[in-house]
Image (cartoon, rainbow, N blue to C red; front, side):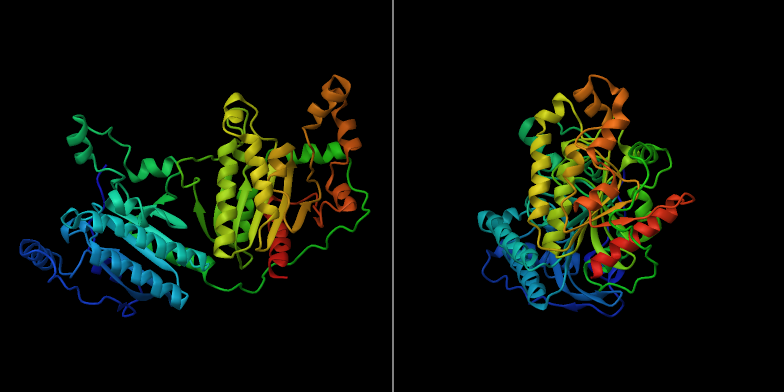
Length: 475
C-alpha cells in the first residue's frame, strides 16, 4: 500500500495549528563539540531540510485551545534523534507540563541517530521520563505516526500516547525491514509493519491522514480540555423505589429483542464529537466492547460499553474485551475524566481459550479497578446483565438501570438447570432471583431506574438514558 504525501515539519505546523498561532520553543543547536565530518553532515542536513535539527517544538492553538506541538522532520538525517533533538523534545514536554497544556506529536523517524551512538540511544529514556511526568500531571499526550516511524522513536515517545494514530500506509515498526533482512538473511513478512495492520491488531487506535489531523486533535481536545456544556436534554422522572414493574421474564425478552437500544445508540443519539479508541494498545482488540472519548449531552467523559450487536455465539465477549475496558478505566483516571460504563451482555466467553486468557482474573481486575477509581464513575445497566462479564463493569459510584434491564449471576435458563435440572423453569428462576431493575432499586444495588415507554424507539431510550447519565456527571 502506498503512503500519503510526505509532509515537512513546517507544513504540518501550518496544516494542524491555527494560522499565526505557532511560537517556536527551540534554542539554537551547538554542533561545535562534534567531530568535523559529523559537523559537516549536520550542516548539509540542515540545508536540505530547512531546519536546524530533526525535530521542531513549540506552542500553538487548535481552534483556540493551546497545545505543545512536537514534529519530526524526516529530511534531516531520516528524522533520527540525537542528543540535541532528544533534549529539545524533553524540554518541550516539561514546558508543556509546567504550562498545563496537552502535547501533540507527529513522528517520522528511523530511530536513534547512529552517528551519536549509545549516548543518543540512552536519551530516549529522558524523553520517556518527561512524558510520564506530563501524564502524571493529568495532561494529555496524542501521537500521530508518519511514514516511517521505527526503532527507538517508536519504542519510546511514539508509543506512549493516550491516543495513537498513524497515517495510511505508514511503515511503523520496532526494527526497520531493511535492517532485519540484512541481519537475518531473509525479508521481514510483508504487511506486518503497516498502520492498517497495527490498527487491526489493537496496537494503535486508528489510521488517520495528516490532512485530517486537525480534526482529530480538535475532537480529542474537545473532550480532554473543554468544560462541560449546558444540558440540552430533558430527564425522565426516575421510577420510585417499590415500583411494581413488569414480570421479570417480560423484561428479559424485551432486552433480548432485535432492535433494542444499545451502546451504539447512546453514542449515535446522545453524544457528540466521539473519538473511538480501538484495542488495548498492547496488541489485542475485541469488537464486543466500545471505548470512546466523547461528550454525553455536553459532558466530557470516557465511555466503555458492551456492544450487544457484536456479541454472538461465534464472537463472545472474551478476556481481551475486559483488558480494553481496563484501558478505558486507566485513561479516565489518568486524564481525570469521568468514566461511564455500559452493561449489556449475555455473558462472558466460556471456552478453553478464555480460561487460558485469564477471563476470571480480568473480571476481578475490572471490578478492583472500578472500585478504587477517584474520578466520577457512572454505570448503566442498559439491557442484559448476565454473569461475571456484567459484574466487571457494574460497581460505579452511581448505578443507573433502564426499567427493563436485569442482572443475574447466570442466564435464567442456566440457573434453572442448576436448580431444577431443566431450562423450563427459567422464568420462575428469574422472578425468584430478583433480577429486575426495580428489584435492584429496592435492594440498593441500583440508584436510579429510567422508565421505558412502550412506544420508545432506540433513539428515544438512548436520549433518556444519556440525559440521566449526564445529570450525574455534572452533579
